[in-house]
Structures are given as C-alpha cells and as structure tokens.
Image (cartoon, rainbow, N blue to C red; front, side):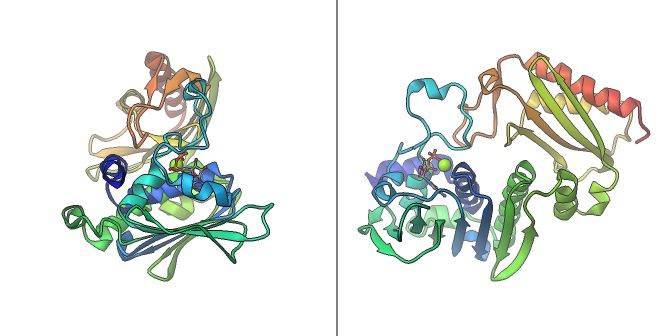
Length: 323
Ligand code: ADP
Ligand code: MG
C-alpha cells in the first residue's frame, strides 16, 4: 500500500539529503569500494548513486523495495548489536513511494544486469539489461506528487549544502572509500580510496583545518577512542567542526558534546569553537541505535563511562600541548 509507504517516507525522507544518506549507506553495506554520487538541481531533479558493491539478484530487486524488506536482519537477536548502517528495511520503499526510481543492478556471479523502474510506488516488471557489476539507483523528481512536501524544499544551494554535509560525514567515516561527487554535471569532489583521515579532512575542509591537528588515541574498558583536535575556530553559530563517529556511523550525542566542551574549558577564547574529529569504537552491544529512524542518535548503556573517557583523553592531550 503506497499510502503507508508515503507516511513512512515522511519519517525517513525529509529532503534530498536524506535520500543521499540512505543510498550511500546502502552502498557501504553492500561492500562497495567506489561510489559515484550525482546530483542535479540540489537533488530535486536527480539523485543518483552508483556503486561497485555486491549487487542485487533479479528476484530480490522487487522485494528490496517492499517495506521492511531488509536483507540485514535475520532474527530478532540481530536487533541487538547491529553492525550494518541500515537495518529497518524501509528506506528504499519510502524513497520509491515519493519519487521516480530507476535501479540497475548486477551481481558478480550474474551474466547480466537487471533493471527495475518504480514511479511513486508503481512497479514495472523487472527486466534484464546491460550494466556493470554493482548497483546504480537513480531517484528523480522527489516529492513530485506531493506539492506540499515539494514546496517545503529550499533552494538548490541550500539542499546542496545539506547533501554536502552528509557526503562529508560518510567520507570522513569511510576513508577507505573512493568517492566522487558530481554536481550539475561538474565534478565537485574526488576523494581517492585508502586516504588517511588527515588527508581527507584536508581535502574536505581545507589545509587550514587539517594542518595542525593534534592526534590522540586511547583504549580502555572496551572503548577505543581516536581523536584529531584542531585549532579552535571563530564561532559561526552551529558546531560545524565537530564530527563524532561511532563504529563508522556519524552520531550526535549530548554526553559526548558536553565532554568535548569540558575538555576545552579554560583553554580557548569564549567566542571560539573547538574543532574535533572523533572516532569511537566499541562493541555494538554497548549502545542502542534504534532510537530514531534517521539513526543519528544513540543510547549508550553507560553514558557516564563514555563521557569520562572522552573527557579524560582529550583533556590530557590538550593540557600537554599548546593550542
Ligand atoms: P536496509 O538498508 O535497512 O536493509 P533499505 O530499504 O535501505 O533497507 O534496502 C533494502 C535492501 O535492498 C537491503 O537490505 C539490501 O539487501 C538491498 N540493497 C539496497 N541498496 C543496495 C545496494 N546499493 N547494493 C546491494 N543491495 C542493496
Ligand atoms: Mg538502507
């Protein structure tokens, strides 16, 4: 029922950047090493993701677009300790219910690719076609049958800003990936695979940010922390230069934000913002990601422990160095 999918879409798909996030995460889950993202008109006209991942079998193409069709959870036990990016199996169904989707996919062991078109939930039959290994998903005319939602979208520049932000988060979390961003036919970003975090930060945010990063590592009580701390920058409203990742997933967490602020206490001018890139790794059983459909927030089993460890590691580094 497309109505139910459209309602679900409201939860997961807010704007073009949400589509970008879901598609990129699917490519990563599919084991891709190269991803090309193409955007036209801030994603309103086209969002296209091509990957060299495992591909989708012809028989699985249709089911992949059915709500709660995930290949990533097999039993309720799997809900504990989720390691893949996606797990709800609603992203593709939601996207296809509010746009025109074209998928071409080919598995490595397949002699041909297969194509599926879906127009606002209306599926055409799957048909064989030519195509490389991997998957291309094109999403056109997002919300075109929902004028109220369509009207809510901002200018192409603003939507592109949101897309860039998601692209940046994924690029930082996955330095192993070869990533290309093409905006309105122009190559806007080209990140070579297997880059160092430092080089990637430099390419994404400029040498001024990446040059003087202090790096610190720690591992204690099952929590591994790697943090790169930059020179504080002039405050510009939001906390744009705070990137926290948990097991390869961008997160926002108030305990961690607080710890970061505490670590810098008395060390920076009040009108400046700390620049922090933090990579946390821990057993997935130590937190729950199933809090919100967009999965940006997590619930730590022991948030005090995470807080104190982040604070201690950062504080030690900051006090032993001149910012
Ligand atoms: P979820 O990611 O939560 O499983 P999605 O709706 O995002 O749900 O995707 C549904 C299914 O489609 C996935 O479980 C996966 O099997 C398949 N899929 C989606 N995108 C890709 C891709 N790029 N490569 C291979 N398989 C994919
Ligand atoms: Mg997904």
